Image 1 (spheres, rainbow, N blue to C red):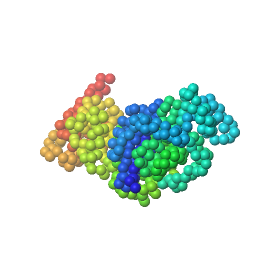
Image 2 (image 1 turned 30 degrees about the vertical axis):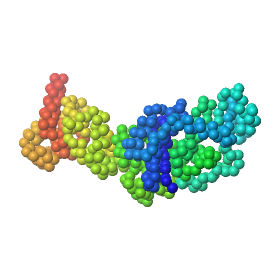
Image 3 (image 1 turned 180 degrees about the vertical axis):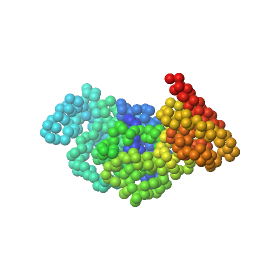
Length: 477
């Protein structure tokens, strides 16, 4: 069998974690089996489709390197094909025109509910005479599929086992609306048939659609794909994902500083397991992925676990690769990387203490951007008159360093502590605040080294002026 899977999102909103997990599973299965992975945009719902969403879908897949072999196909480009099949089905009594008014259908629904019955279409137009059914005076109609009235639909789900539906529970599905547009369930069938999809991997919310789609495929004498319905993802309260962080568009995770490797590793484990292994690169995912490892139970989104994985990958992927992703965040914050140390040096300084790339970008401004105002609490706490003397001492010592390395800088700081007979906190914190504008930074010797000698000397002078000005202002009051 030539394996062929598909990812078929609807462009009606953001492509989120659940969508991407489905795409990843379909992609992994196709890649493992040497098959093809197809991208299809299911935009047949013209009223709900959002044009810009397609751009986000493509961007998200590209960011995660989930490449496709065919597509993207758009259902709106295939309306002529759908209508051709519908017309064929009408001619061969597989489908019929339904002229029932909305008023009749609503009354039917209310009566069925009152009688304790499941609301469904009663086949009124299916069983009327041809002369009445095709009354030329009536222009508004939908087209319904002639669903079998007896028997059952049984399919073997790769995750859930054998599933059976009674045809009596299924009504005659509308396959073309009154405005002439084909419906979702019908378009999916024709697409999977034409595109020779062998495995349909999708969310469990589509289980109820499956028997309807199988019946249409059988009517058309088309092959039936193999189905695998993945369980939903719940939030930390075990509720369906809301419009909070977990359900945000996938590109928001890039914007928030996550590496694609961390997101993929997290998603593959969100419902699938391989022994006790936690860390998977894409090659391992492809090698080990199998439907038997997918759980039937819902998965719970754990943001802390995603942060843990991201921290792992920041520290274990090749540093040049991590720097290439960090550069995007630096550009977003309009930080000129020409005006400071190499990003690889920044990663060495911040990787152990940071869980996202955005966090690194937010905390390294002072390596690239000069500042001349101290207005934060750190400056008020540490840049006091008592700090002027050790700051001047540091300036002289740093000016005389011949070999500007973290090691020599550390030696100078240690010498200064010993010569002034004070604790490192007494003079180290004023120096840190003077150079960075904050009371938090990587190890002081590495921070001093990365900022550079000329900037270090200028910022020490600036801090001394700040302290002196504050003293004068205090005395004048």
